[in-house]
Image 1 (cartoon, helix red, strand yellow):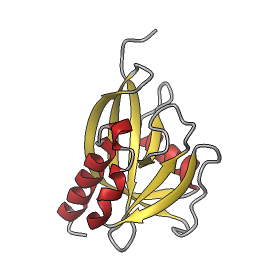
Image 2 (cartoon, rainbow, N blue to C red; image 1 turned 135 degrees about the vertical axis):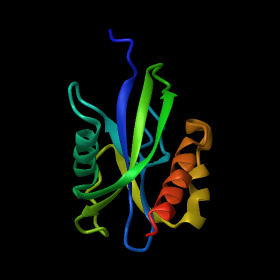
Image 3 (tube, helix red, strand yellow; image 1 turned 45 degrees about the vertical axis):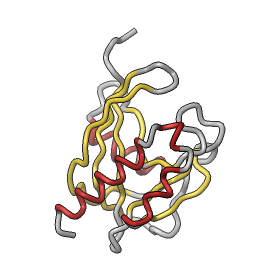
Length: 149
């Protein structure tokens, strides 16, 4: 068994109004059940992190990454499963019908587009993820402001 942390990619998907996309994880998910989350997941062996980003966006929403605006941050965390992870989150734009994501059945139950002033919604079930999702969202909005968009 590898001692290396699992690599993960996260997508903070931005729309033309400067909002970021979040989806609710299903209540029966092992990690972060019933919480709001960014799109993303684990890298496959040998997969570059940007490839993971693009694959996960398509798998979880049906959209295609059209532009990577930049890196939001890198986060190290250990899940309830005891496995350490290194997550790289990116600010992205996508192609597709932004009103109709194709959420992954059984994994996500709903979605929301949040403006920066709405991030307190992400504190729901904060005890499950120690507020990490809100911190990532705040970093995403700061990155978006830095791009001048």
